Length: 231
Image (cartoon, rainbow, N blue to C red; front, top):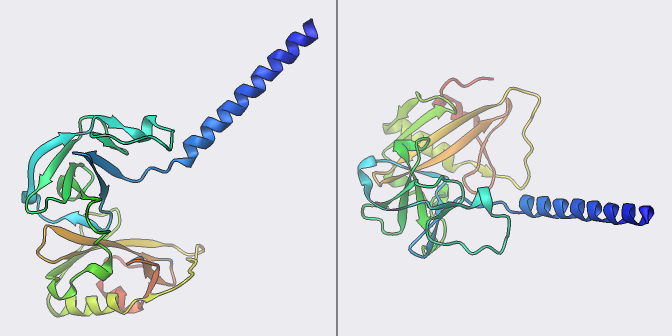
């Protein structure tokens, strides 16, 4: 009887381990996209665009009522109004003046205090570099990542900068050199619209590269526009 009881106990423990492993596997399998949901519509974060003018933020229309990344491990979960991937309960949703397909979400870490989200009812993501109306760009701000101060580029220098960006060459495969000191920069392009385009530029000690869509290599001419560049 004692041996039988031990076998039963062992079986229960093994089943528990399998259950824990399965639960962990399900949790790891969910990689939540950055979204919020309101009025039956999911909105996804614009990661290459920032709010250019805080005055474009309109009235509060709702708020987060549930944070899915903290509590949901079921991939078949159906999102509902007030859900957000990562924002805490109570975080506000705001209308964006003149842009009914956008929401501004209160975020102290974002430019001008709000992060922008676009409706999934819109036809695709429109903030890749290929979507930038370069003829309308009026200025560029460039700063080293992690630093608030950088420099502003306008006029003929801006035209030259845009030429360098446009001339970047896409590569099918690129592995950065990890043996040298790396640097990262942010570049923001303003067109007069309420959304400015923002991209990262990396330097691995040998090569400058960025991700306007796929990975692309930049000419060393980009150096003259960067702040605190190091080689």
